[in-house]
Structure formats: C-alpha cells, structure tokens
Length: 344
View 1 (spheres, rainbow, N blue to C red):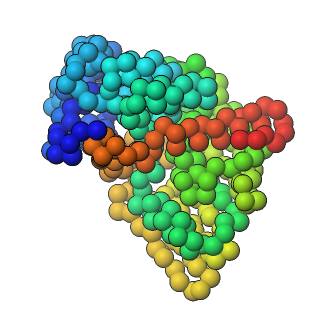
View 2 (view 1 turned 135 degrees about the vertical axis):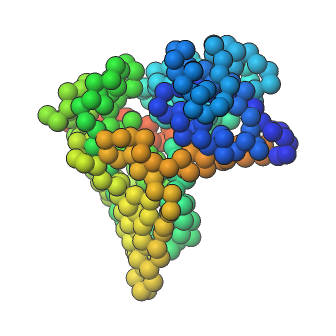
C-alpha cells in the first residue's frame, strides 16, 4: 500500500488494438500515474504507439520488469501469455492490471490468481463493463432487496464479427485465445450477470461453430442455468448476429424486474415505480469494429485499480471475481461436450 497522494508509475506490455483505450485512460489520469514505458515485440508498433499517444516506449519487457520504480504492469498481450507474465510481475513485486480473460483454461486461470495471491500483489482484470453506471446502480438496488427474491436471471449477447476477424492469426484458437465467443466476448456480460445474480450452481447447454464462420472454437452458445436459491436462467451468446446488437440482461424478482440493454436499462417495481438506469458513455463494440466504444469504462477500471493499490482494498474486478466467469464458461463447455448437466 502506498500513500494516496503518491503518484504511481506504470509499464504497459502489449501494444495491439486493445492498447488504445488504456493509453487514453492513462493520459486522462496523468495527475495520478506516469507511464514509465510501453513495450510491444515489433518496432513498428512501438513507433506507432509513441507517435499516437506521446508515451515513452522501451525495447524489451525486461526494461519494465527490472525497473524498481515501476509500481504496476498493464498486461495487454494474448491470453496464452498471461500466466508467464504475471509470474514475472509477481517475482518483481509489481501489481498487475490484466486484460481479460485471465488465461486460456480454467486451470491456468487459477494459477494466475494463485500466483498473485502468493506474492501479495494486486490483480485487477479488465472487465470494464462491470463499471457501467447502470450495472453499478442495478447491483445496489438488487442488493438492497428492491427486486425481492431473484427467480430468474438471463443474458443475451448478439455480436457480429466478420470472417476477416477470425482470419487474423491465432484469433479464436484454443492455443492462443483458449476459446471463442464465451471467453473473448461474452465474458463481459457473464461477469455482469454474476455481479447481479451470483454464480450459477448448475448448467446444461450447447456450443457450436456455425456455418457463418470458419474457426476452431465456438461462435454460437445456448445454455440453461440454475442458481443456488433455485432460480433459473438462460445464457445466449454469439458472434454471428449481423450487424450486432446491444447485450441484454434480465433479472426477474418477486417484487419487480430489471432489464439492462447496452449502456442503460429500467427497473420496474410491482408497486408502480419505474427506475431508469442511464449511461451517457455509449459503450459498444458489438458490431464489425470491436473497438467502437468510449474509453470511459476503461478509465474507471484504471481508477479503481489505482485506488486498490493506494488503499489496500480489493479491486472491483479482481482476479477472484474474474475466476467466477471462467468457472461458468468452463462448465458450459463441459456440459456441451458431455451432453448432460454439469455442476459449476
């Protein structure tokens, strides 16, 4: 834990398309954090990043891990590299803000979380949609019992990705990404559903690769969920829904219903009240351009992570929280393979 008034120093590893909202967020927070260096394996990416954002770059990851002045590392590399990089950060005593998913399998994801816990470093995960104001407000109202007992909790993700998206080397493969729509896109909505209704205890479902895409992993998934209190739910996720639609979460309770769509939503209570949940940040990325969204929620992730470092509290989107989404995803895929209901 450091002083709340102390300016932190960060390093960035990974300068692909996911780096832009993080760079913009760190520039917004320049009164709280300095970027000591950013690294990508190709000189062209380092040059382009430096020219676009005016942030310093370094020519090796060692320059970041070996710099004792750097407090934390933002890791934006492909999922299959996360465990090794988190181990390096832990050895160097640096906190980690990690792009989702944790890793390519449930076991490797557990190792990521355990590595951070053993080293007593903060592990935040970039599940930025957890920071949507509508989600935060809905979680507060549900926690206060405004909906009564939850009887059903469901989600639907209808994204569109053209074949060119999956033609990129490694995209949607087990070796690099660990899976398809569940780990790469739906993990955000799954994380929100768990934040609102808790982790299901049992699932059954189907996951396929549709004729829309030529890829190794799943692009259409449907699952039935059962929660610990007996509530039921449904999960639907795809990247084959042209041209792409806002994600939807519905929570039905004994006292009312919460329906969240995209950045906003409405809570309708049986006593006649209606509560509008709005967000002006215009989150998106559900169509052909996966980066077509505001960086405001990414900035909220960074602010929460900085506060966790300076106060010693847990991150809102911590490694343990992200692991819940991985457990559910793993259970759905096992249920599809086994053709029977699976405990989460």
